Image (cartoon, one colour):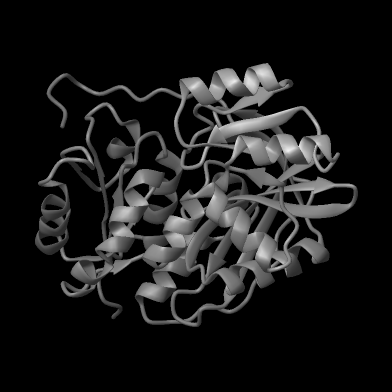
Length: 327
């Protein structure tokens, strides 16, 4: 008889599908437990059990999560929001000491993913194509004069998520206004090409990339893929395999890529489930099952490219109704 597996999903928000997939793959072998700081996070109510917890900035937050892990015999924990990933990675040892596996990359790698300029430097230094990036606007203006970069450009926070405060600038005046309004900005080359997303799983035991699902993005909303189509490309599979190994990434990774002049350019890397992951699952790329295998101590076989091509995903609205005393 296989040992019971309870999985804790933090900051579940509106990611109902992720909860549903884990419950399906556990198949009554254990519980999927969810947390959020708001009782109006709809995904809470798809879990077997849920907890309303303090915000991630609260000094009691970590102890609250560790207590939930101990009291509910949690075997693995993962988060669905960017700001919490650093907390999980930084305190990985605290979880391991109580028998909980955090499904997360190492802290330094997570921090590099959230520092867009650090990621740009890593990609450039390791020979990967990426968007030219500048944190000093005077250096940008010099390169503009030399013809190394042209308008329009993106001006975005060096650290940020969900496309917040990202602006397209077409002139020096616009750049100056943005730099006066916001701190810690960078200027990035505008990538004019097709945009792709890659849902990738790097085995927590073998350290090898075992699943890569590529989708071409058709429509975006608030930084998330709303409509996409599944595609396969051996060149891109190989690029992603090389990148994740060189970067030392582990677990579930969501990678944004642009194709410009027939070259693939890595744009952003999120070390968590991406908002478009349901597309991968519905095409047969079963990352929850791979995570469960790893919790069981089993390394996964490589299944890269084993999915249906030409399948479209379209997100649409759904509603969750709860009583006033729920929580």
